[in-house]
Length: 357
Image (cartoon, rainbow, N blue to C red):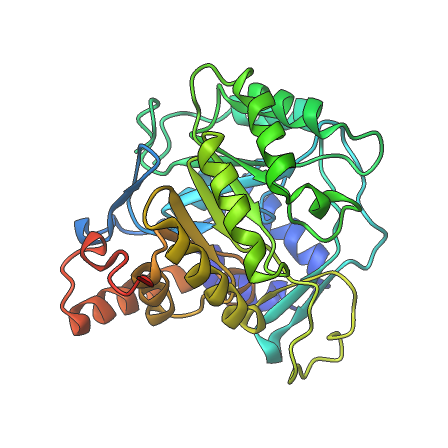
């Protein structure tokens, strides 16, 4: 099996980011990917009724159309989240719309939910040979999530989100509602307690099997905004929050010539705010629902810090794109070493150990 990461990542970075991304997805869809060794039991964790072989997931946005799920799982992720998928196909925003900022360890995107739409997305999921190489009821060793969103034109959130949950439920282990991308006009307006209450009530009528439902939030709200949203999520039956999506802020000190591009910024510059949001929400949550931390995770120490602060797991995106699949083995080794230094035998031992009182 060809190790795509070692051989191809430097070559892919010679292309513009979107071309490189398509080449990577196409190659993995053809089976040109690596295969990671089996995870050690100390890294296994559980959340919203699922078992995860390790706490490092792939965030939505990489495999938007669910074309390379199995190869991505084989690279060593603890879970893979496909999407964001919308009810109808749409081209997204004009190119260029994806920018690497390697000197800042960051990416800016204004993709705009470009994708194949729910019909083809589900056909791609149906082609997967399950189980994946532990899932809710499907026996998968790498749980699969679907990230769902609304179209730019003609959207009706109270209609679209329940329909999307219903459509993907036969194929995935959990669903994430994306209410926080900055690249779809009006989407972030859905991040209110009342709107979330209404959305969850509508979804619950189309989710009789109680597929675990997560909500992905933005980092750009005031700290006081998170408590009513958290309470609405819990009251409505959501089983987790992903903290956070990309930011429209531009922290001081960015060096790249692309720093002023519009869109969502992810990667290292997002880390301080992502961690702060996790700290705020974890202190309010007190373990009631699962929290997944996303934003600027580059080392094993970063992962352990987020887990000690109250995250059940983490997701990566920018560091994976910029460094390639080899980052997974490094992160796991660093995480195990960080756990050893802190006296934790398992991830469960570390979870919430420094959560705010």
